[in-house]
Length: 124
Image 1 (tube, rainbow, N blue to C red):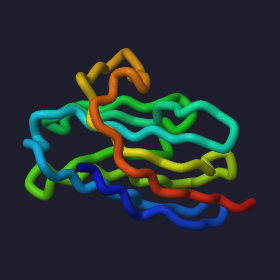
Image 2 (image 1 turned 90 degrees about the vertical axis):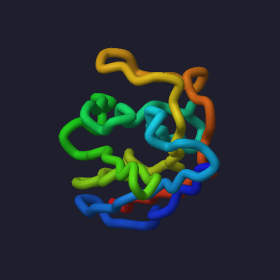
Image 3 (image 1 turned 180 degrees about the horizontal axis):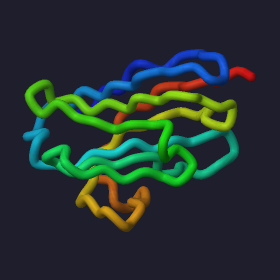
Image 4 (image 1 turned 60 degrees about the vertical axis):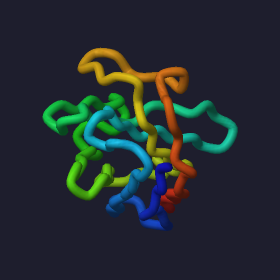
């Protein structure tokens, strides 16, 4: 089970930190990721992290503004979002990935488990 939290309403330029707590499996065995889905759009990749936390990968649209991290002792993955823009408004989902890649953006088919989603709204 993946439980996401931390979403909310923030002004453009602001920050939010999302958390996703995992239970029911050995968290440190799996790569993790964040996706998002805006109204009327397909779900898209945001960020991924290798199971040991040493490698990360980001969508171009968030590179330099978002940071994914994990604490395997707490079975939690985080997404620190800075310099938020109105176009970042979406429901954000954490995901357990089948694998990690430095060069490939995972798609929905590469996800084994989804969290329930948390709404992020950025006002202009």
